[in-house]
Image (cartoon, rainbow over all chains, first blue to last red; front, side):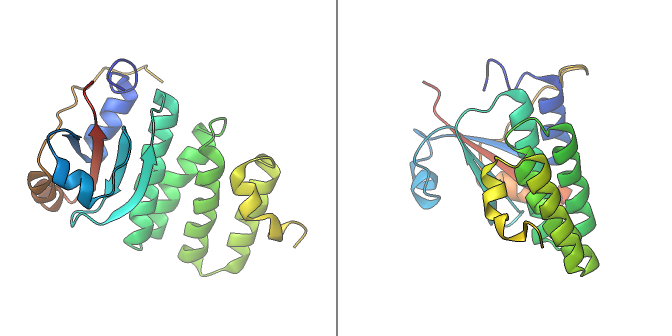
Length: 151
Length: 37
């Protein structure tokens, strides 16, 4: 992360502009490691201001995948705050710009949820998940919405 | 990806300070649990 991903200009700017970034050395913060169930490094956690976790990713990520992960993290935090339009904006960006990464289909999954919550329209959920099936048919997230195929 | 000017990442190393800044700035917290070795 220190050699490649964090020095990336877009990554560092996005982190700085949208988050309060914290790094905890697991050897110096053993109590936090136990309390938060950290079992491997790197572990990336997305918390609200009270320390409630809404997403966790484990393992090294290259710049594009990490930037996509940050966008999904922001989207899920916005979903938790019921800022559905804000969530949709972050998730739409990831599903579009980072579509070739393995995070594209996850962003599309949650984008459909955000649009459904925003409009209160089940058709938005169905359409979003059908788009997921169409664009990423072999993804793990497509398996989660397999039941909407042909609906 | 890397088409803009780099921004120096300023990491905090305290969760209490991070929570205080998160409330003040109305931003979420990103935590990287890492091992320096």
